[in-house]
Length: 113
Length: 113
Image 1 (cartoon, helix red, strand yellow):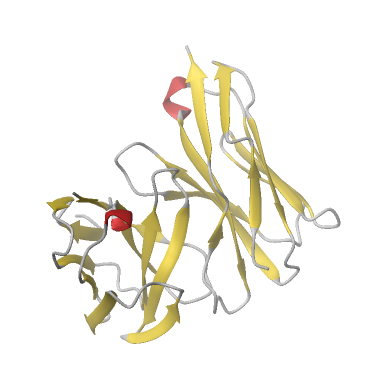
Image 2 (image 1 turned 90 degrees about the horizontal axis):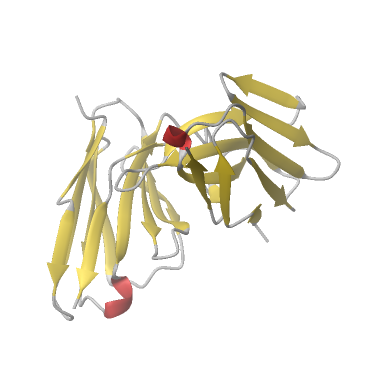
């Protein structure tokens, strides 16, 4: 059973399009995150939600909008995609906000042409 | 500024050798220091973690050494194996976790047979 699952695993799309990535965790965790990993492998937090409430919202273009319908799901919608959005996006979850023990999904590789 | 500086960027070690990856931080509010291991095409996975009240922690072949006064910590891999080849990230989080995990930039480790 996959603990943190993301779909799709790969997205290839044109500039200007809108796309969504879905994430679900079955660990019973309260906190979920979106991280972006660039081509140099640097991991940067984008958002975190605790019990459906936005906790962290880093300096991310407002074209990126997270949505948490319930504490087991955190989706990421991206409007008007740009070339620089190409990256691997990781969803993660943790038992609380301060544990530092994150469980990551396998990532969604977004390529914008 | 919340930063964790990691070195080296890449490392090649012969099988059986002891690769050492170093990290340094500035924020004295950090109180939990995990290491994550990432294989190609996978998400990062928690490997081992330490709190600043201890100077060393061992789990199997992996050891964290922690120097609170120098604000440095390092990962040692004993009897390294080709299967240990991966990217390793150090990270840190402050109490409460309001800002989430801060990751180092990663070390690409190759263990040669």
